[in-house]
Length: 202
Image (cartoon, rainbow, N blue to C red; front, side, top):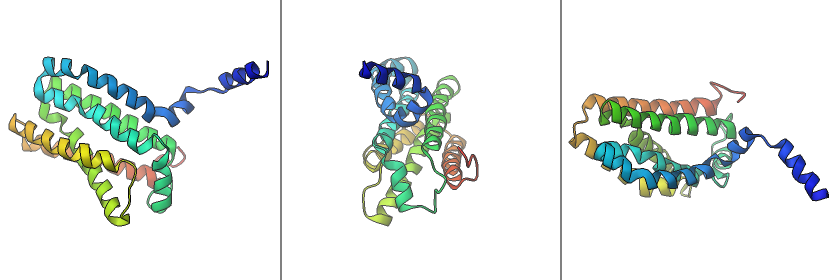
């Protein structure tokens, strides 16, 4: 009887938003597996250039799982860089990763498919800038930081490969400029959230 009452209380206190804050990266790992399964269909219908842009969403989900699944990311930032991101919270991490990564990468795929693949270059540039941050943190502290392995093993080679393929298939200097500019803005957005310049109470 007590067990059923406790279960009922847990159900009454359940809020999807709270669950999402703490479990989005774990859910992303499952979603990434599904996206990889669908990848051959995307390559068949959209070709190599659209397919490689498509892969960046599950690639980044793998990276996010390494960063956030164990809850290490926020603790690491607070311990190593308390003055860099004093206003960083789990909810802000959710906003950054779902809005600036999941939504933006999905938009990049649609633009690559409907307009031209070169406009999807924001995805690999975001990953490469992110990798540079992880490498800088490795150099600064000479120790692992959450997300380092996928940045080194996945993001750098896949990012370079994506840019080379899209350049070879018609991406313009303007496409690269736009992609790199969007990538910088995403990281500036993250920095502004961490510093409390925007949404300080989120």
